[in-house]
Image (cartoon, rainbow, N blue to C red; front, top):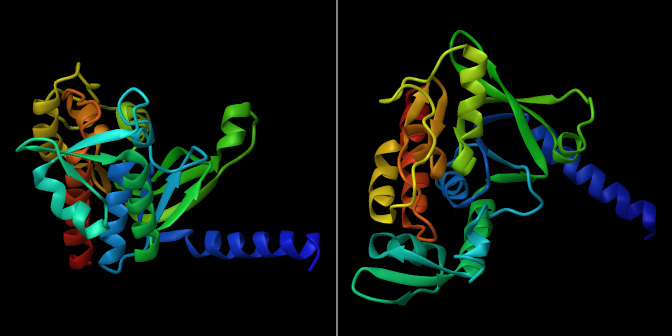
Length: 258
């Protein structure tokens, strides 16, 4: 063994995985809790899923908990999911449970990958592929290229469906609006942006907001609320898991019809 063996092993293994995921059933943009949950459920059902995360680590805002207190709150409705993932929870009152944000995201990431989902970190999505008024892929580049503002052409990934799980900014939906030259068909017309914090309302509406917003493009998590103009919710994460689960169910139903 020498340094070249180590380098060769890394390059060959990554290249094999990358080439194998240039065509997938579902490309998920954002490895936060909703994106990972969506990927976990789809992969568990046997679909080919790749998750693209622009940052170094997966998890979105979850590892920071609430204001860097690395605990999170979830509702009793999602304890079944936490039990399935093997996450330790403690009951706080009749409706709320607390969990470690680090354990939660670690377990979800592990389960998603063991189910078969591939996670590519440090990759940014800068565009989408549209054919016949339908999203059918994403355009990717290294995050370091984007951050450095280098003029380097991107590559592409073909997907039957794309999921915007980019969080508060709903970045993919905004890209689509620019590319199609019109607003997405939402109740208020286009990506509205999230409203001020209202945990109870946000947690309720995020499920209804999880849907197909343009042919081939689904939203989940805070991206869903941002598109529809619903409030943000803070460090309560039950809705994120339920939203990711619902997105997977909706996409799974469509994939079964193909």
